[in-house]
Amino acid sequence: MPPTAVISDIHANIHALQAVLAHIKEQGIERVICLGDVIGYGAHPAECIDAARAFAVCLRGNHEQGVLHDASQFNREAQRATMWTRSQLKPGLLSASAKKDRWRFLETLPESHQENDVLFVHGSPRNPVWEYLFAMDSADLLGGISTKLAENLSLVKKLCFVGHTHVPCVIEGTGVYRSSAALGGTFTIERGSTAIVNVGSVGQPRDNDPRAGYATWENDTITFHRVKYDAAAAAKDIIGIAGLPPILGERLLTGI
Image (cartoon, rainbow, N blue to C red; front, side, top):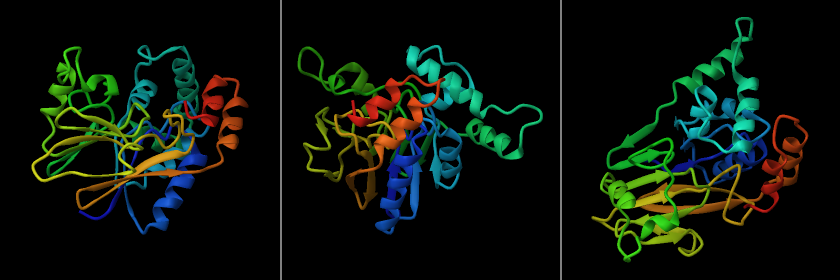
């Protein structure tokens, strides 16, 4: 398999996406797999969709699902952002072909992608679009692996790449959870082992680091990357739109 950049949770942040794609190009990597949530929260959904259409693989996240169908599972801020995003993207009878093409792209996004013994999803192996895997899922009250995590790990042949929580980490087959920082930025899976790898978020990090995050995968080694971008400009774009909650822009400055 050629070196691959695995990205997720762009969230219509074109400033972060452009910085990440430039960083990927600098490393000579041409293949990009996106785990979903290209849209939602941010001010530039159309531009981010246009970029995503060039990726080798792009999956459906819960924000694509919400814009296309139902946003009732979202909190108030996410629902408001979803309604605005839908208003920007959903074509009418007289809409330009570019707008219709973007909508068709969203409609055809798959929920998962498999390459040999490596699975790619947005949320989790057992619920690819909606389920979150958090650090607290790595152990139950008695110190063992939670039922939720055990069921997900049982579906992993070797590696499963996820996003959704916006927090980069690795959950090994034993249930051990380690952040990308605790790993020193790299993780190599041993022969016969399994792991779930969260690649973090390009457009809305939530691990107290405002830099855009993604991972590269080559020869059983995953490398986590952080890329500085103009978060102030991205925040300003969001705050300047009446249909988007200002908090969605403000949080980009702190990464929470």
